[in-house]
Amino acid sequence: MSRQSELAELSRVYDSSALSNRNVIVNGAMQCWQRATAATAAANGYNTVDRFKFYKNTGAFTTERSDDHPHGAGYSLKAQCTTADTSLSAGDYAFIDSELEGQTLQHFQYGASTAKNITLSFWVKSNKTGIYTSSVYKHAGSGTGYMYRKEFTISAADTWEKKTITVSPTAGSTSLITASAGAIPNTNVNGIGITFNFAMGSTFHGANDTWETGGKYGTSNQVNWLDSTSNNFYITEIQMEVGTEATPFEHRSFGQELALCQRYFCRTYGYGTATGAADTSQGCISTVSETAHNYASAGNFNFPVEMRAAPSVTLYSTYNANTTGKVTADATDGTGSAGFIAASRCFIHRANDSSGVGANVLMRAHAIASAEL
Image 1 (tube, one colour):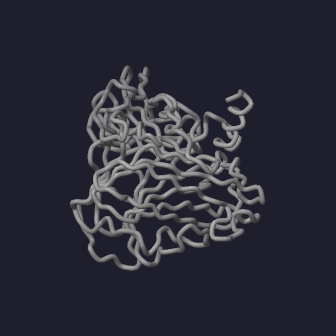
Image 2 (cartoon, helix red, strand yellow):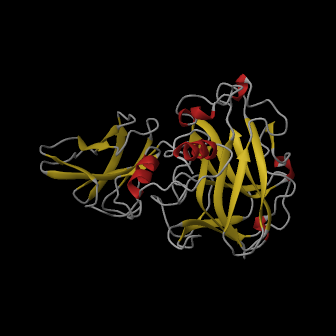
Image 3 (cartoon, helix red, strand yellow):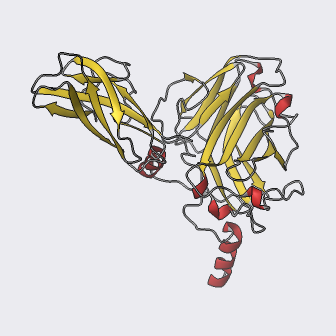
């Protein structure tokens, strides 16, 4: 094959997009787990793996890091049903969600006649076979919220399978995405949400392979994965890119992936140390009160990267495990606060009782910062 032919083929396969930075999903290989790696009950929000959150209003399931991987090396996200619901009500739901920042998605060209095809690919396995659904939710922003859902089938029990979903901007002969109301905000707010659905009641059923208004996450063919506590579900190497074909998964280094995750969530604790640990050494914010004070500073929490927005900050004692809202003076906790919060750092101090803090006292605190979508 000539060089010209090779370039033409690359252009066709990659839809003229970059050969790197193709994947808009953060942590699609499930590398980063700042919050927890062990089985943790899924509550609405972020519980374990970075950049993937969980929603449910029926049954129960845990999520955890697993070494089970389609290529024999790496991590996957494992979900395990722990409380079954064998008869879903119309308004019941359970799913995994990944939210993407609007300003990172402008090359999709949504909201214009030039809107691009996008392809979602991932590896998945479960003991429960059947039809599942994934959805793409284009958030309203300054326009209108539109949702697309597509069925995929887990064909063989307990077997890794690669799935590919290509999303046309005019799927279902619609023009919702190619009209101005289909635009994705070019800011740091929610642009698109990607879901992988475990269970969906009839309230959330829509047409397969079609853009619609409203929150129609699944179809009537979606399995009820919550119907048995024997059910598990594994997923990894999630990729979303411009084009009509799934290119090989774009692997990023752990350091690159962690930095991308820290734009949304970061901690003072060393990686692998549990949040809330009574840890006086690894990464805690610290300073010395050289003279007596009624208010004493523990110093600045300088975030490792510029965060998506000014985060919410929670303080933890370094002396008493799992004690929030505290700054420790030597081995004594007092009420702590974070102030002057910006996307790059915040200031942490302690409001003391009437006795204040004496001279030459070591002030310490741990903290987490969240600017999640």
